[in-house]
Amino acid sequence: MSDSITHPLDDPGADPFAVAADAAADIARLTGVDRHDIALTLGSGWGKAADLIGETTATLAATDVTGFSAPALAGHVGSLRSILTSSGKRVLVIGARTHYYEGHGVRRVVHSVRTAAATGAKTMVLTNGAGGIKPTWTPGQPVLISDHINLTGDSPLEGATFIDLTDLYSTRLRDLARHVDPSLEEGVYCQFRGPQYETPAEVRMAKTIGGHIVGMSTTLEAIAARESGMEILGFSLITNMAAGIQTTPLSHREVLEAGQAAEPVISALLARVIGQL
Image 1: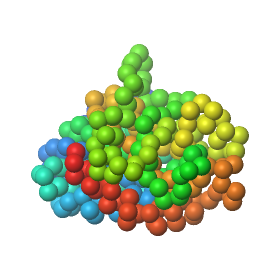
Image 2 (image 1 turned 135 degrees about the vertical axis):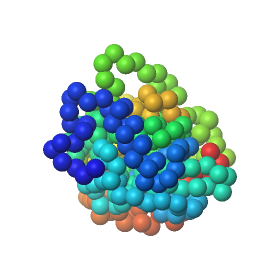
Image 3 (image 1 turned 90 degrees about the vertical axis):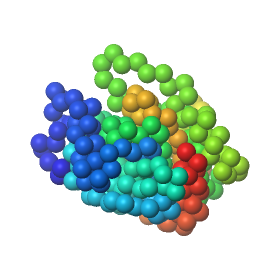
C-alpha cells in the first residue's frame, strides 16, 4: 500500500483497528507466517539487531502492507521482517516507523503497533535513539525506559477510552533485561513533538518534571500497545547529551554516527534480551 492522499487511515470514519487487521492479513500472506509472538520496532542505532535475533524467513517492503508509509528519516530501513528464533518464536521486526513530527496524524504513528498486535504479538519492544539528561551517561550507552512523559499534547486513544499506564514499561521485562546485562541503567523518557531539537530550557523543564531522556518517538506507540493488550519493553540509545548539557551543537549526523558506533554492542544486547522473551 503506497503513501497517497487516499491513505486508509486519513479517513476520519475509518476504523484504525480494521485497517490494522487488513495489514496483519497482508503480512501473513506475504510472509507465509500466520502468527507472530513478539514485535520489535527498530529506532536509530538498533538496526543490526535484526540480523542477530534468528533466521530471517521473509523480508518485505513496508509500503506493500496496508497503511504503512515509506520512512521519512535516514537510518530507518523501510522494511518488515519475519524472523524465527532458536526457541521457535516468531519476531516481527518493524523497520518503518512513522514519526509524529511528519504530520500524518497519530493513527498513522501507531499503525505499526496495532498491526503487530493484530498479527498476534503479545510483546512489543520499542527502541529509539535519544538525548540523555543524566550527566553520568555517555553517547553510545543503552538505557531501559522505566516510564514516560508524553509532551506531544496528543494521544492514540479515541473517545472515552481509559487505559491504565501504571506499569506501562513492564517491570518484569526490565528485570529480565537486567538479568541479561546487570549494568543497564534506566530512566524516564520525555517525548517532544519535534522535529526541532529541544532547547536548553526545555531540557531543564524535562529534568524538573522527572525526565532523564528526551526524544521524538515511542510514547504514543507504547500507549497504543497497552491499549492492544501488549506487554512493553523500551530501550533508548543515548546518541548525544541533551541541549544545555552537551556544549556542542546538536545534529542528526551526530545521532547517526553515535548509533553506527554503538550498533554492534547494543544490537547484540537486544538480540540476547529478545532470546529470553
